[in-house]
Amino acid sequence: MANQTYVAEFHFLGLSRSLKIRLLLLGLFSIVYAVTLVGNTIILMLIWLDARLHTPMYFFLTHLACVDICYTSSTIPQMLTNLQSPGQAISVAGCAIQMYIFLALATAECFLLAVMAYDRYVAICHPLHYTVLMNKKICIFMAMACWTSGLVLPVVHTVLTWQLPFCGPNLIDHYFCEMPALLKLAYADTRVIEKITSAGCIFTLLIPITFITMTYIRILVAILKTQSAKGLHKAFSTCGSHMTVVVLFYGSAIFMYMRPESSHSPGQDKMISLFYSIVIPLCNPIIYSLKNKDIKRAFRRLECRVLLSRLTDNPSFSLVQIVSNY
Image (cartoon, rainbow, N blue to C red):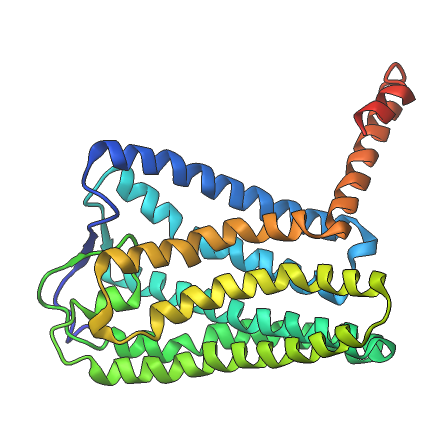
C-alpha cells in the first residue's frame, strides 16, 4: 500500500455545495443521529432491565441495536463535520479504516437478520423444540458467528481496494469512504475487484436473503395451517417487524452493490447510501417499538418502576398521581 498509494489524504465533495442546504442537512442529520442513538439505546436498556425480554428473539435484537449504533457512528459524524466545514480531509489510513468498519458492520447485519429469521422459524414451526434448538449456547454461537463473519469477510475487499494506486484526484464524490466511490479514483483497472465484490455480495446478500425468503415461506405455510385467529395475529405481529427491516435493508443494499458499474451515478449512490446507512438504523427501533407489544409493555413497566421510586423518595407524590401519569 505504501508503494502504490501516492495521495496522502482524501477530501469529500459531500451532499451539497450550497450553504443553506448544508445547514439544513446539518440540523436534520444531527437530529436523526441523536434519535437513532437514543432509540437503539432505549431498546438495549429495556431488554437488559426487563427479565421477560431475556429470550432469543430479543437477545438478537440487542445485537441488531448495537450494530445500528456503530453503523451510524461510522458515517454520520464524518458527514456532519463536512457539512459544517466542507473540504475536511481524511487520511488514507483513516479512509481505509472507515471503509472496513462500514463493510464489517453491514456484513454482520446481513447475517444477523438471517439468524433472526431462523429464530422466528423455530418459534412458529417447531414451538415444542424451541428451548432446545435455541438454547443459550446456540444463541451465543450464532451471534458470535455473525460478528466474526462481519470482521473477516470485508478484509479481502479492503486489502484489494487499498492495493490499487491512488495517484490522481483525491476528491471523493460521497460523504464517506464507500468502496464504489473509491474505485472510481483508482488509477488502474478495477474490473477484477468488481467481480470479486459481486461474488462477495452473492455470499453476504443473496444467500442470506434466499435463506430468509425460504424461511418465511415455511412460516407462512405454518401460519395458514393455524386455525386460531389469535395465533394468526400473534405470528404476523411477531414476524412483521423483522420482515419490514429485511425488505428495507436488503433491497437497498442489493440495489447498491449488485448493479453494473456503468449504471452507477454519484447522486444516486449517495441517496441509496443515505437510505441504508442512516434511514434504516433510524427506522429499526421505531419499527420494533411501534409494532412490538412486548417492547411497549416493557417500557410501561419501566415507567411504572420509575414512578414508584418517585413515590418512595417523595411520599407527597401520591398513588393517584402515579395512576394518572401511567
